[in-house]
Length: 94
Image (cartoon, rainbow, N blue to C red; front, side, top):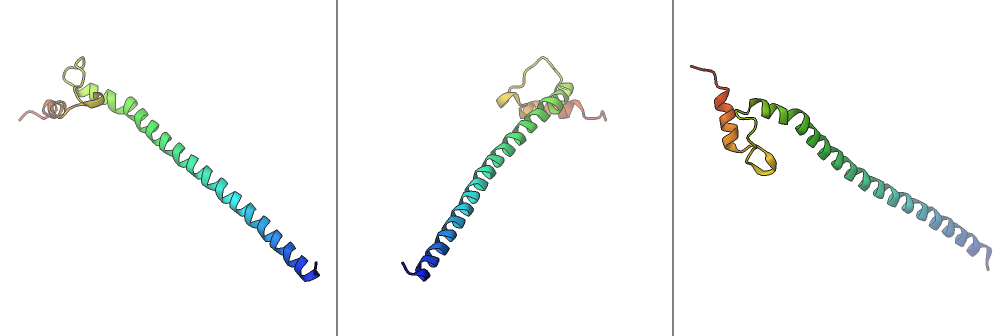
């Protein structure tokens, strides 16, 4: 084999190895980024559910006229009638 051809093959081989290393890093970064996005969404959903359970639910039960009555809305959320009763019960007397 000619010396020039051998050096070109060696350079090409080095470029291929470098390219392979870079592609593996890019793929690894993509996988970690995808996992990070899913983890972030799970944390946000769990944090909002926690905030509802700790802060909003007791506040709504405090202002409900009949605390033993369960909310009739979807997933136990108050309906528009429940909210209207809450507004009417907290209006100042005229």
